[in-house]
Length: 160
Image (tube, rainbow, N blue to C red; front, side, top):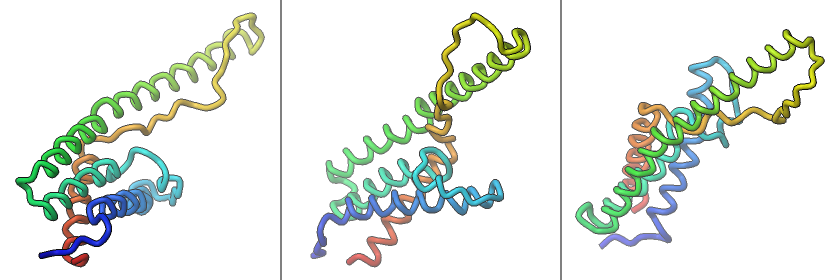
């Protein structure tokens, strides 16, 4: 019988989260040509760390407790909900933020051109733009899910 040190599934899932966030930096470098270390703490991007976390958790629980166990079923369903949300609602919220930021910039430009900066129009500007990278493209979610399962399999192989 296998012994589980501490909470194998929890620790493995947290490690998958950290690794997925770390991998975003070199992937961004390959895609854009610059090292953006803010990606370590940012949401969005390739791969989805949310997807990596929940898929690693489900896979780890399946490996540890059996894929027919209720605990695996709960983790798998909750993981699917998280991944659907990341590619759906959160991504659309990010697209809405992009549209609002663009609209505000166009409005600022129009006011500046039309009134040469002198107007009675009371327009309160936000100090910072809305965050646009909230969700994920479907490919980022799938990549995160695969990444999480791979982490679970690797740790299962070497943990015991």
